Image (cartoon, rainbow, N blue to C red):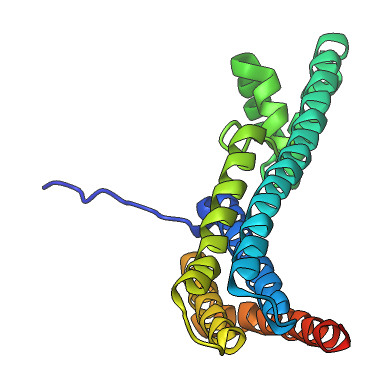
Length: 232
């Protein structure tokens, strides 16, 4: 008799890329659509609206890339500093570090004798890796990658921002702010729902959260655009 293989899929494995992708795409849609709606509400020509949107896309993508790179690089620097400190402690005080590791396993539920054995075996195998994982909570799979994060954020922002720009380019009518706002809210609802579904959360709640903040941003910028357009 063949045993069926036990396969597991944990949604927490998606958290890193899902957060970056949703954040970038959401920012791209909301910021670009809000900018375009504000400019359109001020009475600008279609060419000016489209140019403003393209400028917003480029500036936003670069801002996302730079911000994500700096943020993730700072995290990487902090983790490297912690590992360097741990490496020095393992060199200078190996006995104390062994006791510390055994104490961690005792707190997690192992008997003291078993915890000591586990700590000794893991220390003999790779002491730094054991302390990085069990003391600092650092693993190779979750190591920060600044360039990858920067590229992913910029790419997802660009994809999100392209949607409202496409609507501006294709829609010929005079009700651009209304049409664009409706399409943007629909896109945000779909994005929020997909993100919630991928993360195992409620699809409706995910869609409502994103749509609410998108509607607020669109309303504020449209109001400011109309105010300045009327004033001018």
